[in-house]
Image (cartoon, rainbow, N blue to C red; front, side, top):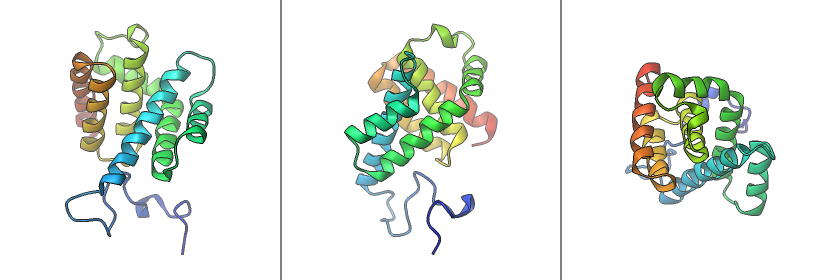
Length: 165
């Protein structure tokens, strides 16, 4: 049987989709918790890397070594950080295009990191856009406040509509 890494992309399960053995009502609570943890870890790494001391990938690996035991959280965090690092210029261009009144360099570091991670997930992951949007809007509310929650919802909604996700 082929390992997960050897399977073609079309055969891999969606990141936030329930596996065949999970209850019909959706993913199990521990699976949801793992994905939320993965998003928080990615956010922390991208945020810390914004200060220029280390790369986001190095920071993430340090966090994973120190704290995380769930491979699902680690996998999602790595995919999100890799997407932000690989597509940072196009992600920043999307911020400028969808929210021109908020220049990337003028955003607070946490707000910039939230947007980069969220846009990275919406554009460059198999996670359904509506799932990613709901999760990142909640993280924006938690880590930045209601104005950022509204900005996040608007930016991600416009991007998802533009790319047909």
